[in-house]
Image (cartoon, rainbow, N blue to C red; front, top):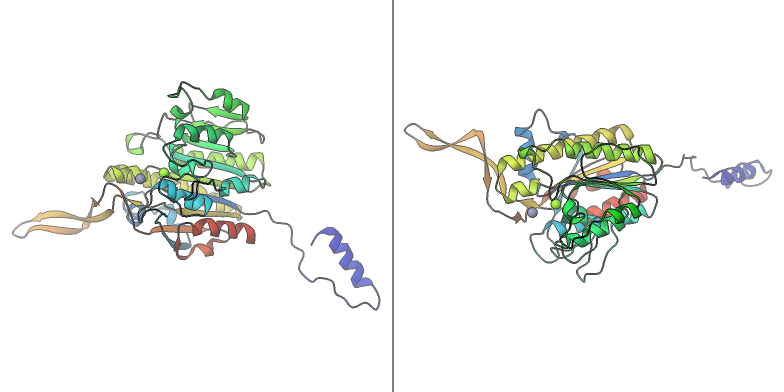
Length: 374
Ligand code: MG
Ligand code: ZN
């Protein structure tokens, strides 16, 4: 009820002999739409998720989620999706063909949730441990028929409505194959670029920020990456809070390389990336618990590697090779993605909608419904 309606209803209730038809709804302070943090573990199936139970220090952060669902991941073109169609399902709410970035099956561009919210005075962020132009992050701000068009995707990032970007992919912006450097384009778009380190700035609300910290993908954790992903997540939250505390925000955070550990059939690679992703989940959950108006969703685009945590085979005297159920080994059944359903975890306003078994593009619809209802 706004102020003038309130005056009117008080006036009506004071009028003698008049039936009281004033609305009785309680006066509610206007509440801003919830913030959304969507964390995507690329290639994170149930065994990848489970690995954090056994290889991390203490309990993983994700056990704090109250709501669990399952996402069916097939694309419109294939039973087994790729990351482009998988992320476009989340960003645009559509099933499309493998390779599509923000485009429908007929290659028409479809508005993403990030674009939709940016047009409604939301702040936006995209963070990944791959190139920021890679399929998963690109699907939130770019529209190209083929994921490999990363030079074009880079130009679209600059022209996009992403306020805070962090990841790798320098080579798609600077000293490019076409010999262009996009520094002037960044400046024209009001984007402060840092190609050296994840260092906080004096945030200005009318500035955008881009951290491009590797030529291609960021260094894998098992080869020495620092806490880039959780730190970038915390930094983006600081940027949102300090520049525009009244504006809701939408942020996508990707643990990109869980998938790459799966493709490489490298268990150590995969597990280290999973544990790193769980740290970013912890940052998001801590924020959401304190804030009270932030929806956090963790999911995956697909499983990768047909990965499993299996028993170790040991030589037992006089019995030959036996399974030791108290010793884990990594098993891979594939060098590619698999068709398995993937987990969805949710916390915050509207989280209940994420329980159940549903198609991957329903995650978009559930996020939109949460924005409308809260
Ligand atoms: Mg990805
Ligand atoms: Zn993959």
